[in-house]
Image (cartoon, rainbow over the protein chains, first blue to last red):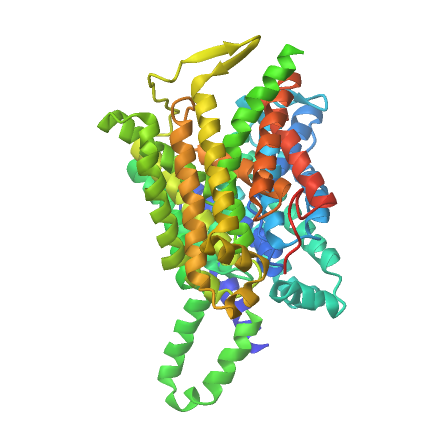
Amino acid sequence: MKNKLRNLGIVGGILASLVLGSQLITSGYTLQSFIMILLYAYWATSWNIISGFAGSISMGHATYIGIGAYVTTILYRSMELSPWIGMLIGGLVAGMVSLMIGYPCFKLRGSYFTLSTVALLHVLRLIVTSNDTILGFQINGARGLDVPWHGEEPLMMHFLDKHWYLYTILVMLVVALFITHRIKNSRMGYYLTAVNANQEAAASLGVNVTSYKLRAMFISAFLTALGGAFYSQLIIFVDPQRVFGYDLSAEIMFFSVIGGMGTVYGPALGAILMVPINEILRSNFGASLSGLSMFIYGAIFMLVVYFIPQGVYKEILKVIRSLVHKKQPKAAMVGGATNGNCSDSQD
Amino acid sequence: MVLYTQAIIDGLLLGGLYAAIAVGLSLAFGVMRMVNWAHGEFLMVSMYLASICITSLGMNPYLTILITGPIMFLVGYSLQKGVLNRIIQKDNTREPRRVLLFTAGLGLVLSNGVTMIFSSDTQVVATKYSNASFNIGEFFFTTPRLVAFLIAITCTAALYIFLQRSETGRALRATSQNRSAAKLMGINEERIYAIAFGIGLALVGISASALIPFFPYSPSLGLTFGFKSFVIVVLGGKGSVPGALLGGLLVGVIEKVGGIFTTDSYAQALLFLLFVIILLLRPTGLLGKETD
C-alpha cells in the first residue's frame, strides 16, 4: 500500500511538472516532440494490457491505430461528427475487430496469435491502399485522407495552440495508466498473470482463459484506437502506410518491452526513454539516413531482450532500492529483502 | 483454359521456391518450437549477398549458391549456438516467447541496416539468363523460373532424404517428436538445434541465389516472404518437409490463379483467410502431426 501511494505520488509529481514545464516550451517543434513521446507512451501502455499482462504478443497493433484514425476521420469528413465522439466509435470498431481476430486465435498457442496479428495488419493495409472507397466512404487509397481544417475548433479537437494537444494526450495517458493499474490489481489482473505464466495450469484451475484474454484484447484495442484518432487530428492527415504500418507496430512493442512488459509504468517509461532518440536523430540527420532510428531501436531492443528481459523499469527500481539500502545498513538485512520481494510482485 | 493452366504452372514453379524457403522456418518451429521472426529478412540479406557476388565479382548467378548456402548455414549455426540456445535455456517454456521477440528485433535491424547501406529502392540484377524463355505447346516458360524450381525441389528432396536416412536427421526428427525422450537417448539437444537452424538458413541462402536472376529485391522483401512462409508452415504443418512442399505449391497456385480474378492485394487477403480457416479447422496443418 505504501509502495502504491509512493508510486502514485511520483507519477503525479511528474505529470504536474510536465504541465507546468510545458508552458515554458514555445517552439512548435519541441512541443510536437513532447506530444509524440506521450502518444507513444500511451500506445505502449495500451499494448501492454494484452501483450504484457496476458502474454499474447501482438505485432500488429497498428491495425487499431489505423482503424481509430480512419473511422474518426471518415465520420468527421462525411457527417461532421466531432472527433471526440468519433474516436469512441473508432475504439469500439477496433475492439470488435480485435475480438474477431482474438476469438479463433486464443484457443491456440501463442505464436499463432502473433502471426495472425501481423497478417491482419498486412491485409488491412493492402485493402485500404488499393481502394478509393470502402463501404461507400471515400478513403483515397494509398494517397491517404486529409482532415478538413477550419481553424480553431475545440469541439472538433482542433487547436491552434498545440499545448491543448499535449494536455489531451497527457490526460489519455493518465487514464490508460490508471486502467492498467486497476487491471493489474484486480481479479482480472491475477488471472491474466496466471494465464501468462502457464496457460494450461490456469485453465485447469478454472480460469476462463479465452474470456479473460478477449477482455484484455478489447480494452487494449479500444485504447490504442483512441490514440490513433488523436494522432490523425494532431497531424490532420491519415497516411495508410504509416497508421497501418509494421514499423509503427514494432515501435510500440519495442518501447513496451524495453520499459518492462507486464509492469504498469514500464511501457510508458520505455517510450519516454526511446522516442527522444528518434527526435534527436531526425533533427541531426533529417531524412538522409532512413532506417537509422529503427535500426537503433531494434538493436537496443535485442540487447534488452537478451540481457534484461524484465525491462529497464525493474532494473531502475532495483538500483534505487540498493541506493536506499546503502544509506540504512541495518535495514538492509531483513527489511530490504522482504521489501524487495513484495514490490516486485506489485509493480 | 490455357490461361488457368498457365497460371497453375506459374504458381507451381514459384510455389516450389516458396517451399524451399519455408522449410527452414518449419524445421525451427517443429524442432525448437521457436518462431524465427527474421526468416524473411535472412532471405533478403542473402539476395543482397548474391547480388554483390554477381555484380562485383562477376560470378555466374547459380554459382553464388556455393557462397550464399555455406555462409547462411554458418550464420544460422552460430546464431543458434551462440545466442538463441541461451535464450531458450533461460526461457524454458513450450514456445520460447523471447526468441520471437529477439528475432523480431533482429529482422528490423537487418532490413533497416540494408536500407541504410543500399537505400530502400527496388533493384534487379540483369543476368544473361534473366530474359531466356521457351514454349512447350501453348505454354510459356521462363528459364530462370524453371531452374529455380528445379533447384528448390532438389534441395527440399535432399533435406527430406537427409532427415529420413542419416543419423543426424533421425536425431533431429526425434527431438521434434519428443524433446525430453530424445535427450534421455543421449541426443545433444543444443547441437541439433544449431544444425536445424543452419540447414534452414542454408536453404534460404540457396533459394536467394535461385531467385536473384528473375526476382526484384528491396529491403522490405523480407516482410512479404516472411508472411508467406508462415502461411505455408501453418498450411503444411510445422516440422514437416512434405507439408512445407504441399503448402508452398498451394500458396503459389492460389496467388497466381487468384491474381486472374482479383487484384494482387486481394489474392494476399485470400491467403490470410486460408490461414485463419486452417488454424480453426486443422491447427496441426494438412500434413502435421500432434506433438508434445
